[in-house]
Amino acid sequence: MPKIASQAKRLRIYIGESDHWKRRSLYHAIVEKAKALDMAGASVFRGIVGYGANSRIHTAGIVDLSSDLPILVELIDSEEYIAKLLPFLDEMLEEGLVTIDDVEVIKYGHKPPTR
View (cartoon, rainbow, N blue to C red):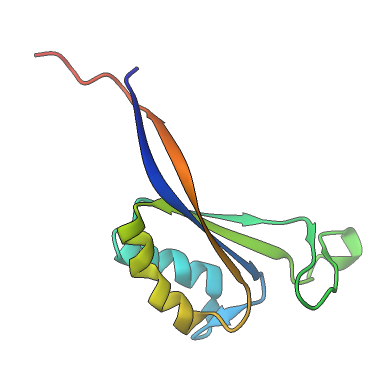
C-alpha cells in the first residue's frame, strides 16, 4: 500500500454532552458545520470521566448515567480549512476549550489500479 505523509493541523474542541446550540447538541452542530465546509472529517469522542473549569467531576457511573459527560470533537485538516471553522466556533461556544496543534499525517491507501 502506498504511504502518503503530509503536515496538517488538529483542532480539538472540549465541551460537555449537555451543551447545545440552536436547540440541538453542540457536538452534532459542529460536525454538521465541518461537513458543510467540506472539511476532511470529524470525530466525536465521549469521555467516561472528566472535569473542566467548574472542577465538578462528571462520570459515566451506573448512578450517574444522565450526567453531563465530557465530549471531544476532533478534526484534522489543512490550516486553511481549520481557519474556516473558527468563526463559527466563536458563535457556537459559550464555554469549552479549543486547541490547535501541528500534526504529521501518514495516510495509507490502496494501490491505484494498473491499466
